[in-house]
Image 1 (cartoon, rainbow, N blue to C red):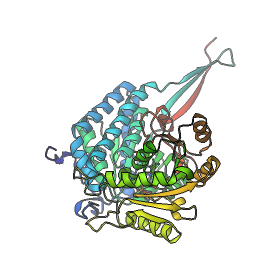
Image 2: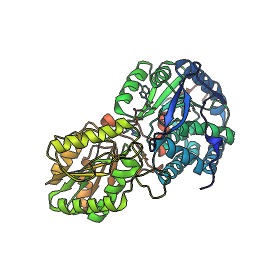
Image 3: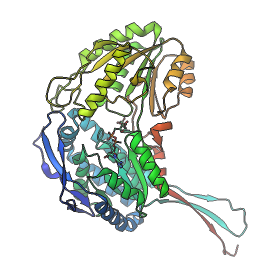
Length: 486
Ligand SMILES: NC(=O)c1ccc[n+]([C@@H]2O[C@H](COP(=O)([O-])OP(=O)(O)OC[C@H]3O[C@@H](n4cnc5c(N)ncnc54)[C@H](O)[C@@H]3O)[C@@H](O)[C@H]2O)c1
Ligand SMILES: O=C[C@H](O)CS(=O)(=O)O
């Protein structure tokens, strides 16, 4: 890898095209979860700075929305080109602050670019309608207009692509944006500011703040100039934001937590199912909202699947610093994340589960937990009802197709689910009964910019990506035109 270019490494906030610190001068430290080393510090901003960022986005809005979709697309493509020009540098920053292996970081950044490029084109297809008028002397026209200034609050586990898939839809629809990334991974977000400068985006179109999350969120919810909140994160925080945004009648998009069932039927290709389980469960060390959280295996193939999965885990999963080429499993984001996985393992073992492999914190620097496989899991265990968000694969046994569907739907979440079967009839029966926004059939990783990504129940509201992803950034206007002398 070529030497790191620090041009994209920014430790100030980006407001109205200017790089600024917090009014208080306070900062918050950022550490590398693989080593515990201090990476840098970013401003501890609050409501006042957020107010100024919203003002900057408001000032930039008229000119941005007045551009043609093609002109906005050109800016967006220039941004994508700048991102790809700095792919290695961005990946180093992402791996340093979040921990995922460098290859996964590059893959995430490339996916983020795909989202922005996709929406650059979709922005040219924001069609309206002319509706046959019920009045002979009037005409009806329906147009779609940008909602205005959008506020984005994003998580640490995909610190680039969770911003990109929001930013792409916002910019393409003619909105401007204020972004608050996670306190654990601010540098990947601030790099968007450096790249926006490099790509020549007009000042104020993108604004990036770090600091006091509740205060920044309150300003976003309560400032009348900001018209939309798009949040990706935990269901707990999502509900807080949705409640406050609702008081101020803001449009909201909520991409929240999950508890994905992964079902293996006895008519599945077991080798394919094992590879899908590895991909779904252990991507990002199990720290994705769509990771398999509960693995249900039909009784007739349970032992065989467990043996195959154990072998695959021991052959394919290699914990370590994400900067090392052989690493496939980076650290968890922090001590609390390690404690949660450990608690889920302990709870399962206390309630009768069997430890097959892993089951302990790795005695190295940083916050690592061993890839873990448990069998004998039951619905009484915490893993069955809580998002683990770590490298724990728990196998549950089921008897019938009806049992599998009932167990899979036994959760307040509804983001992603997966099942493996070679039965065509079963595929449609199960696909249509699972209460989730995303369904992987014989596939363990299904995210793409062209398909809608969104949950039901406590997993959220709205969809990101796909042709549907623009809807949340647009208002529909109906115009009735009379006096035409018709
Ligand atoms: N559905 C999806 O697309 C998706 C994608 C990634 C992560 N997630 C979910 O996110 C969670 C992990 O991410 P996380 O730990 O960053 O989630 P989190 O909810 O703790 O934090 C998410 C963001 O919200 C901010 N925040 C925290 N408290 C806030 C408050 N009171 N007001 C305003 N902002 C606040 C944080 O600073 C961060 O930027 C998991 O539950 C995961 O399932 C969902
Ligand atoms: O963690 C949630 C992300 O949305 C995962 S994905 O990269 O979009 O599948």
